[in-house]
Each structure stands twice: as C-alpha cells, then as structure tokens.
Amino acid sequence: MNIAIDGPGGSGKSTIAKILAKKLHFAYLDTGAMYRAIAYYALEKGADVADEKTILPLLSDMEMKVWEEGGVQQVSVNGINTTPYIRENRISMAASTVSKIPAVRIKLVELQREIASKTDCILDGRDIGSYVLPNADFKFYMTADSKVRAERRHKELLEKGQDIPVEALLEEIEKRDLQDKTRSFAPLVVCEDAVVIDTTDLTIEEVTDRICRIVCK
Ligand code: DC
Image 1 (cartoon, rainbow, N blue to C red):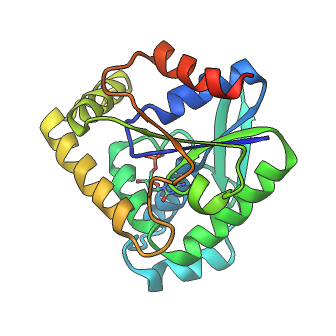
Image 2: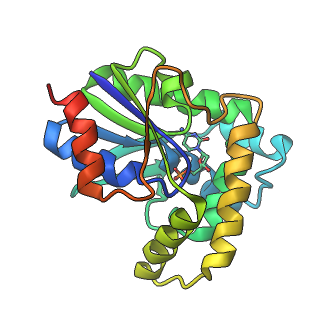
C-alpha cells in the first residue's frame, strides 16, 4: 500500500507522515530530502542549481542511496552522506530551484517508485499523488496559511541553531511555493482525488486522527 502526502513546505507533511508510518508500520520516504541532497551535492561541486548545463554532467555519474538509521532517513550522493547538511536554510531554495530541471526529477522519481514498489510506504513531497504514484491508495494534500508555515519553520530552524527572522522565512516560503507550483514539469498541484487538509488551526493529533479515520479502517 502507498500513501501520498503532498503540499507546500511547513504544512506539516513530514511530521504527520512520520507519525503515521510508525502507527501503521509503514516505511516513510521524505522525497524532499532527495532534492535537498542533490542541491547540496551540486553546491558543493560549485555548480549553479539554476543552470541545467552545469547540473546535467553531475547527474550522469551520480548515485543516490536512501536508507534508515536510528529512525532517521539518510541520503547519500556518491558515498557522501548529505543528511547533516540538507536542513540548512540555504538548501531549501536551492532544492526547489534544482527540482525544476526535468532530468533531476526523472532520476529521483525512478528511485522513489522503486522504493515504493518494494514496501508499504508513506511518501511526502510535491508530486507524489500527481506524478510519482498516480495510483496511490490514498492521497492527501496538506496546506496551511503561509504566515503559520513561516512561524513553524522559524521554530524548527531555531531548534537547529539557525535564527532567521520570520519575515525573511515568509518571503522565502512564498517564493518557493510559487516556484514549486509554476514549474513546467510535475508542479505542486492539488489532485482531484486528494483529501485536502488545512492544518493552520489544527494540532498534530487532530491531523493524524483525520487521516487515520480514512486510512486505518
Ligand atoms: O519538502 P522539502 O521542503 O524538503 O522540499 C524541498 C524542495 O524540493 C521543494 O521546495 C521542491 C522540491 N521537491 C519537489 O520538487 N518534489 C518533491 N516530491 C519533493 C520536494
């Protein structure tokens, strides 16, 4: 069984997906981490994430591995474990930008489909229900007011020692939403068959319960 959870950054997807995966004994795949890993790797190599010409040569001999260690998803690129670095704020926009390149998406989608085919899995991302797994058993689209999402991101980054003003995060979130929603290949869209959950005024428990009522029958 596959469950797709899509939505913009800060909507609560990964928090909910992790809780559900534990509850259902499903694997959890954070597909955003895979785009972040490519962005990190590209920046380390001095490539321009907005320039397809500098990214394509990196893709041809790039091997990505995804596995779990101590309950935390790990992503390596050519043997480098990117996990400790991909949550840095500079990587968020870089991941969104590099994800516009179709060849990047094609490469990652192949791996995502392979992982999803092997096990019961909850995947979160932007295009899971619309492109990666259009036949997913359940599809959810989570969203929230952008100010609330910026505040959540601020808290999350603060816990990791990065103090970035909420206003700057809000601007960035709105820019990233627009970029993710308007790219030409597999943009962030609300699938017709997805259950939409606005998490602005909901607690984590309320969102989990809502999804569980649908999935845990
Ligand atoms: O979920 P996240 O914030 O970690 O994702 C980072 C970026 O990666 C996001 O802005 C767009 C891209 N992404 C994507 O294009 N498709 C996905 N399935 C997941 C993420």
